[in-house]
Image 1 (cartoon, rainbow, N blue to C red):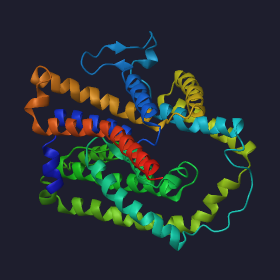
Image 2: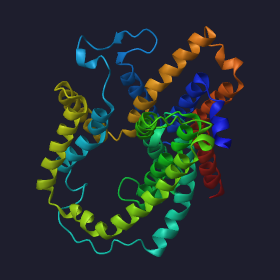
Image 3: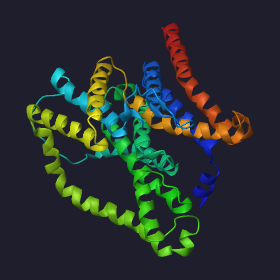
Length: 372
């Protein structure tokens, strides 16, 4: 009830400001020397989100006359172009950096020292991921990316270099945030009837098909449905635990597959996924084009995750901004709604945070130099 009452305070203006905060957080949590690159990639993602029909006029934009771009770029295609295809190409172009074939998997159990190292990560990302999941439209993807970025940013300098190379903290952060966000997305669904993610949107449709209307009265009118959903989460996690623990040794054997067999499978499933997702051949061309571009950006040490976050948030940012402009006949909603103004101030502070950190680090370095 407490979270649902807070969620009720959010309207289109607040959601717009919240998206701005999310985009600003990319700069705040970017790695050392990566702030400008992260902002540039975020801007590129926002630009890509404008392709297709606009939220305000429903007119096609930047489609270059291609009908398949009327609805914009597909998220699945873009995600695979940013992550799957570059990884496959890197296996070919830089095999030494990606590790060798074969090897032996010795121990799959987490040691006591590893458990101790990830305990605070799990705690932080459980809370952060849950609250991100509570916000309708945010979803587990954003929670995962932000969770990874936050943990990399607050890690020690020597630990930051391990992120992206098998760091256990880098593995625990997005997985924890993802799971927590999935749980949090049920809060707006069950209390407000608003799906917090694609999965809960499907669940909402199923409930409506059964003449069950999620909302504030669900706990009163249909308590058996409400508590059945809650219990299903516990039972589902327990079943996953029982199934996954015995299967871990077999799943891990995928790592032993030789590279010359693995690369064709990655490419095949990537191309098939893009085609099936939109059911048109144009997606294959988009996938290959963006995949090659993403590989070049990866060679230049540009982070790809900010681009995807900018793309995801770009559509929601535009929708909520357009709606707020229509409701308030201009940008007056920024000053008329205190929560919107407060969120935008937070966004400004987040943008300024890297500069503040750099100045503080420079001052410390100068102090050490003077002491010597």
